[in-house]
Length: 238
Image 1 (cartoon, rainbow, N blue to C red):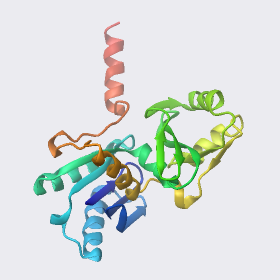
Image 2 (cartoon, one colour):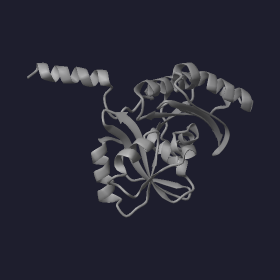
Image 3 (cartoon, rainbow, N blue to C red):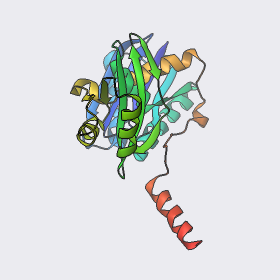
Image 4 (tube, one colour):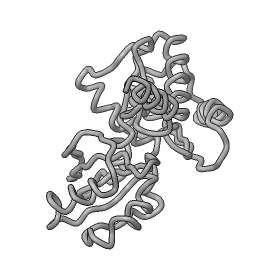
């Protein structure tokens, strides 16, 4: 079973080709270049270097959120187009769960955090043990204070590792009060397409795939323009 996996949920972007849990090829960049200009060239280059054919792909996996609204839309649109052209199924993957898979093979409590702006984090917490990753809470958008309160109330006696592009910021904001946290080393910190593929393998085994037509991003909260419009409408109705 071959899976082409894509992550474009944040500043970084990645693509991976995985066959039966073996990484055949993976490409990762972390620049200010737009995903619309880098994602397809990365896919083409990886397929060429691995001498694999798009027609041999069995499933297309993509991180559907949370994350950058623009990045998520680009990743989802790319996968929808490729899967639709090839009449293949898609696998929508939580960005936060894919990040947690960076710690697969270890025993840890993993706090996946992404900077959601507006004084919030996108967050979910997982327990890794050997080859298993267990979700401890749903994906959520919450304030720094609410995350600190949750960690203090529920994980006070547990060593917690922060992963994700918000890991360093979370440590800076939380560590004065939450003393049992550390930040993942740089090579394990950011989301990777191979993590998306790892989650996708599990979802495929449980028949949790979708058609290209029904593949959509999962934002967790409204885009800023929609939030501002909703606020204006609420004020006018007063």
